[in-house]
Length: 570
Image (tube, rainbow, N blue to C red; front, top):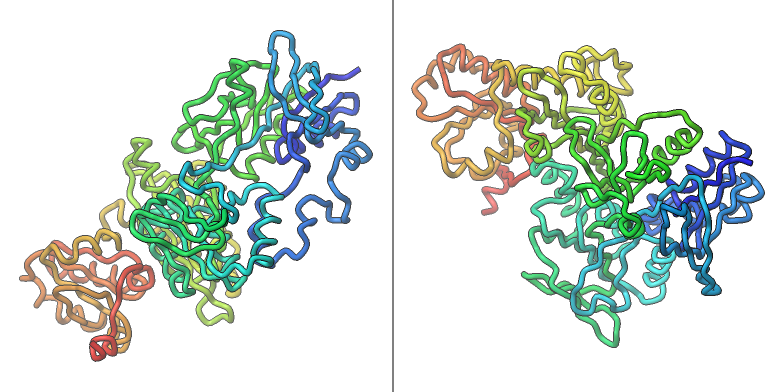
């Protein structure tokens, strides 16, 4: 007789553990206890059902061959005893038993185990506000809630939707509701969209397509309550306005389900999730934990994190099964990698951003580099903007953010591998990335960003971040030298600059001497900062001392712009 393995939770981690364990051990007795009515569903795809990309909801809990992944499936195909409607109420570590209630009958059962796996997941945060239980307010987390949202849109003639929270779910649902033709508003307490993933200036770039599509963004606003009529939501009240709504999605985050673990005396980590070692064992070696309920370690900073991701949950499940079989495999941690589609834009990141790098006590510099995802003369070329961070001194790559209309996933995934292996900027510069004009340029965006950041770290370039210049442009004495052509300059330029001249790069060597007596800083700029950087070098060689180039130029400028036509209309 093999080991008796009891798994609490039958979605990502739980069913991955069970399925992998069965492939490794034909004799193990595997019992899964799931509180809900469904097993092994793909929750990450739910927004794409609302948006119409996924036509059949059964895709989320059926195999590619159309077989429902229910208890019968797991019994017949995998010899796994998966039980739904089972609410585990207690763990007795001394007796090595769990107590659970059959929700259908109310009957209490006691189940012994040799090894216990906690895959209890997480629960959406609810807002304790007036009328929070009104019809039409949803968390968008469980399958039955998603189906209810779809049904209400169709049956209640919903026209106005408010999303509270601008994280992954909020952004994906904004696109979904836009595709459904609904007037969509987003309320976010922080000063940016995707606040956990993107630095301010990168998030501000993503604002543009949202606003262009007519999606309303209410940043730095706090939700105070909901208005309702006859028990049905009619509006969201913030500290600044009232927003009409017949449907509200609360997407302000989730909390790990650790109540069972805490009651059993298992250690809870500083992130609030269950503490685990590198083998994903809890403080009790006979109990493993994985997925949303388990704490993770950041591979760069070493920080303990709560990072609920479906991809992480599945990796945890596989490793737990292998370790139950005695393999002794170590889980290396996470890079908090994330990506999402926002209308015709993409946004992704991996590693550390400015906030998390500073919290880790690291000294670093960053650079913003725009470009194309393939050679500009190729059909389908799209823009992409990278922000790269590296450690001062070592030039170790710490993190990257990318936004654009194409090629974001490719660059993020490449950086995942590089950062995981401890790459430096020199390593990135010399990566032998596959090249052909339909896919990228001869020097890929990653290598370009690495080269630019190396120049900045070694003092060959002095760059100024867009958000810093936006904050300073009305407060300091400077001369802004735009080195684009007159046609580019007249077509579009940064609004609100106090002192600006347009000198084409080809004329700058001859005219550089006349700028030597400029008081204050000189800031050079072009379309993507290639000419701006060259202008910076030219002016420094001409004797100008306090010269900087605007990182990303116009291509990465996320704030107000103006053209000659705009000025004439005013």
